[in-house]
Image (cartoon, rainbow, N blue to C red; front, side):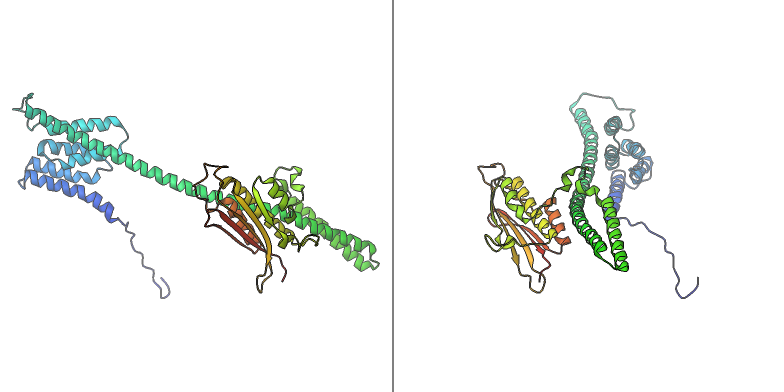
Length: 399
């Protein structure tokens, strides 16, 4: 060793829980107590076999058959009860075969019923003999049945634990899949926006290259145009597959905007009241207000997912969709979208009435992810009238 620090290696001791130690020591203590109470402290074969029957319980879990054989000898010669019953119970709990358990129960019954020695014993049909036989059968069958019950209980406990862990893993996978799906959809939309902007840059650079008379400026404009084209090609090569998922032309359709909300509400099959004047314009005839494309798409997707949830969980409910602009203080103003629905209509879906709305599924998780990626806010809470409220705010970039 060098330096002032000295590492001291300590032996590792395996921690034995108090419960496990008690489960191991208590049967042995009962067997020893039974041996001394039945045979006293006088040395002899019955006492030695009884003590051996108690001590062999230390290995009953590793060798239940050997523990049962030794304890049965102690029962037959030393007249003890606890050790052989515990050994048979352990055998029934740790062995899957039925034949070995039945054989153990029959052996315990005979060891308890037959006296030692057999020199002057003759079987009779008297009342006492029948009662002794029934008592022996109850001891053998009871220990075997209790061991089987313990085995079944342990298997059910393990099964419940496995099912619980499996459900937790499935829930985590579903949540991750929901986030991944939403991010993939954002990537498709970002691809459309970036491709459009880079295309404009390329066109402007090409126009500048044609109209510029200075050779150096023309060369720079050409370089910008070439870089824009190369960037567009690489972008389409990397994330173009995310556009449609299957290579169809559906992904090339224009992305929805706030102005498409009335059509979405009409196609939803719900009773939807729209209040969009604060977001679309100041009134009839006024020019439409323009928002960033990502903000409008996020607002549209929020309303779309909210209406889908209403159809699934509260069919027939009245829905109010409000889109407005709110002042966020020192930060940029927020485009807020609130979707509030009432309870389900019993006439439309009687089987849903009386069941509470869920606290939020993976669709809501995706909406929250979208809002957070844009720097906005999201909330989904039940209302006092039995309905649900989804509220989202998206920064518009305007002060």
